[in-house]
Amino acid sequence: MLDSNVAPGKRDVDTTRTRKVIITGGDSGIGRYTALALAEDNCDIAITYNAHREDAELTAEAVRHFGRKCFVHHLDLSKPENALAAVDAMVADLGGLDIFFNNAGIMGMQQFPNLELKDLTEMFRINTFGAVLAIQRATRHMLGMDPDGNESTFEEIATMARKALTGNVSGPRDTPGRIIINTSVHEHIASPADTIYTMTKHALGGFIKCAAFALAGTNITINGVRPGEIATPLNDMHPEDINNDRPYLTVRRSGHPTEIASMVKYIASDESSFISGMSYDVDGGMAIGEPMSQEMYQQMV
Image 1 (cartoon, rainbow, N blue to C red):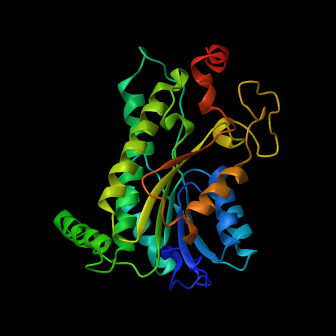
Image 2 (image 1 turned 90 degrees about the vertical axis):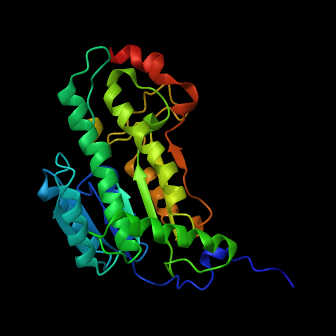
């Protein structure tokens, strides 16, 4: 008789359950297409927007066409502390939380040695500080903790949960929890043309690794996805305007947001239970050629 082909992370889990998802920056681009991919996978969703409510409502309408719930919330991460109330409100709407996809962020073209403190502060507040505060709040909800409780309580639960690795106790969650961060290919390769952006993404890469250890044994994983050049508003492109003249990419074109959403969908699934603390390139081969320090950088400057 063959051994079970069901991985431990999927055993005794109801695969037909409705999962509850938060996506920051769900009004367009990668956030929008991820919402659609997860709605198709039996998920109810809450999304955030900063400036474009109408676009967020279009995403929500599309999600509802799949028969799923979708809630829309405003979130301005230029004040990172705004993330706390926003996460609380979205969890209340959803009635719980299984998956948190941190996707909101901004980009800028600042180069060393001409960096300004105001630009450093703004981008770190939105891309890094706001992301970390939102994820920390989401984690507390996933673990059934008091969101406003003291930090030592989290440490106690995390320490207890690690014992699950030895079989001494069971993890705090009966079903898998997933935290996913949209970093960038610049989480690990340089983009001299936008130095501060690269710095914020490197910081998130370090956070993913540290948080994975803190969450050991909790049945919550944290991972990142590293997009390359994707046809989104952040890159001043429409999803259907794929640029096929990209000689520095092995696939010779920019990517479509659905190609990132597909990776997020997998990382968010029960099948990814043996993955934590990692980031994955979905970049058309950008990282392997170090283009930002060569041809593409020369074009930018």
